[in-house]
Image (cartoon, rainbow, N blue to C red):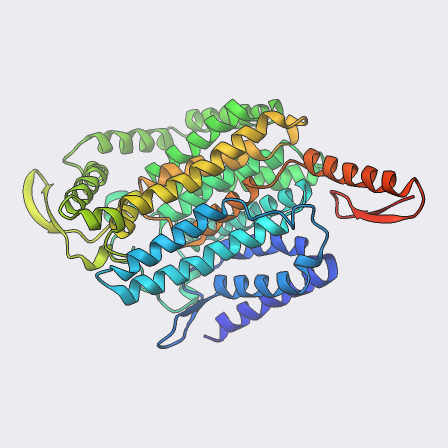
Amino acid sequence: MGLIILLDLAAVGWLVAVAYSKGFANALPIAAFLLVIFPVETRIQLPGLFDLTTQRVIVLVLCGLYLAIGRNEGNAEMSEPLPLRFLLFGLVAWMLVSSAESVVPAISFKSTLSQSFDFCTVYFIYARGIRNREVLRMVLGGFVAGVFLCCIFGVIEIYADWKVSSLFPVVLGRFTDLDDLNARGSRVQSTFGHAILFGSALAMAIPMTLYLLSNVSRSKDKVYLWTALALMSLCLYKTNSRGAWIGMLLSLVVLVLLGSDRVRKVIAMVVVLTILVLVARPGIRDSILSLYGATKDPDSLQGESYQWRYVLYHIAFQELARDTGRSLWGYGPESFYYLGLTTEFSLDGVMHTVKVESCDSAVVELMMDTGYVGLLLVAALMGSAAVLGFRRYPSMQERSESAYPTLLAGLAAFIFLMTNVELFGWGQQAYMLWIILAMMMKRPDEELQRIVEVEAESAMAESDGWGTWTIAVRNGVETEWH
């Protein structure tokens, strides 16, 4: 408990010091870094209320800093409506409806309030706080630094067999009894709740690292980013997570199709290095091929794990089809594990009636918890962000500096992984998702600069050239117009 309190105080002190000395916007990358690195075990239990995790402490501090200084900083978009606000409010409202009809209403309402505070608040703060491309890059850098630190812990876990989470009290989570160590060996998870979640964060962070690599010139920055990329690749391999591997490859495809030539060159270098590693270390190649072959074998543990995803969809469709109301609003947020579902499942070639104790799909959980309407609202939220980001990309004049392909790549990886793991609405990777959505809603720098120039020209015209005005330009520097 003492260590957790000390870490919370250090995080709060760092955020407050940076915000008041360098501005609220400069605290956002620090918060992104902190939101990623802390495990679920860093929490203080408040009996009868809720768990005060370090992430919630960070969000609370961000709220206070935004109200104190953030909203007063110059921002050309401050007066505009919050992007995606109708879909966001609609999703929260529908979760409340589902909670009212929940089979476990107290747990569902608590989950709804928790997700609304944890993620909607983060989305609002980052959507308002990021004022220009430089701050956006700094936030991406914060994510990369956070995942890099987690990879350092991961390397220690791999080669020293010591987990950083062992420093904190054990927290029973939804993955506690479901780790298949005997099936796939030791799987690195660092500060995350499971190796799959760590792999999900890596699948989103690797495109960010590639983007930053393509936009730096200093040698020390390149050394740092290449080192981070190497450790991320090692840890991604050691997660032994098929979904995370495919999600990372999908994100690279998005970057190749939409990214700049400089990003493509960096990806080409990574591909060449990967081929050299596979040639020099045939054991790595053989282990990947072995896992692929086991996945295709329905009688293997890996094959059964793969097939279980399809079984979950069958269970969800079957259960929701029994009641029209449930098909609309589901059984309530966080209710899946209280339904006592069973199904017929083949184990070692023999059919067994098994209790459904895991939900390896965020899509299935959303269907069961909030019905088809809740699932469609989440799909509309992510789809709208993706479409808007894609529509803005061609209008960017400086394609090499555009971060939108990187954000789209991270979003694509997360959406794919939603079909393979229960990662929506909790965990460090979920904070990454909502901040990515917020960054995708920011307008290009060129548009912000044009607004500033138009406002300045209008003010000069109205004054007939006399007088002095102060306006905020895209770098947050105040410029006087005479």
